[in-house]
Length: 148
Image (cartoon, rainbow, N blue to C red; front, side, top):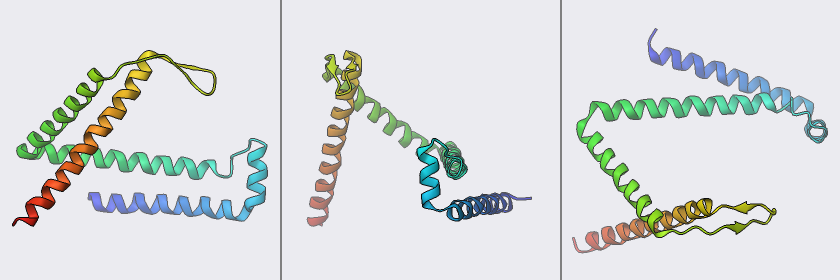
C-alpha cells in the first residue's frame, strides 16, 4: 500500500468523523448546546475540538517532516535555511541586548517579572527590526525593478 492510498483513507476517516460530529452538534441545536455549556457540559462540541486538534497536529507533523526531508536532500537549501536561522537568532540576540526589564504591575493585580518584561521588549524589538527589513526589502525591490 503506497502513501497516497494511506493518506486518502486517513482523510476519508477523519472527514467521516467530522461529519458525524457536525450532524450530532446540529441535531442538538444551539440553545441546548449553549445551556449545556453554561452548566459546564461541553460534551457536544468536545469531540469536534479534539478532532480539529488531531488534524492540526497531523498536518503540522507532516509539514515539518517533509520540510526537513527536503532540506536534508538538498545541500544548498540546507545552507540557506541555516543562514536564515542564524540571521534570525542574531536579530533576537541584538533585540535582547538592547532590551531592559522592569517589574511591571498587570491589570489583574499580578506582577510581570523583570525577566518577563525584558522578553516582551525583545519580542517587540525583534518585530520592529524584521518589519523595517521587510519594508526596506520591498522598497529596494521596487526601486530595482523601476530602473530595469
